[in-house]
Image (tube, helix red, strand yellow):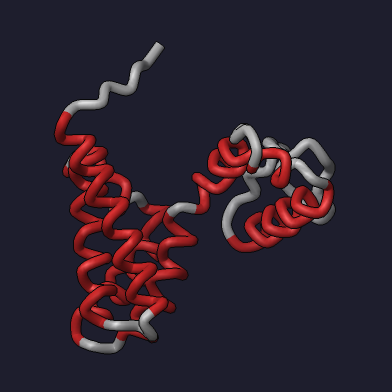
Length: 160
C-alpha cells in the first residue's frame, strides 16, 4: 500500500497552492485585479511543483491528452501577466477544467464523505447535477461517472 509522506517541501507546496487560490479568488472579487491574479497564478503553479515535484508536474502538463488544457492555461497565464485579466482568466478557467476533469469524481466522493457537508452532496437534487455534469463531460472529454449511484442518461461509456 502506498503511503503519502508529508515532508516539509510538500507542506510548503500545499501552503503556496492555498495562497495561490486565495490570491486568485481575491483578484476575481476585486474586479479582476491583475496584480492579485498574477500573484495567485505564480503561487499556485509553484505550490503545485513543490507538492508533487517538478518532474511529475511537467509530465502532467505534457501528457498528450492534456495539451489543449495546458495551452489554454498557459496562454491565459500569459494574458494575465501582460495585463488582460478578464480574457486570461476565461482561458485559464477553461484550461483548468480540461486539465483537472479527471479529478472531479474524486472530489465529489470526498465532498460526500465530509460529515455535515456530505449530507448536502448526497441529496437527489445535487446528485442530478452530478449526472448533468457527467453527461457534459462524456460528450466533450471522457465520461468518468462510475462513482454516481444512479444511471446517467446519454452516457456512452461502459464505466457508467
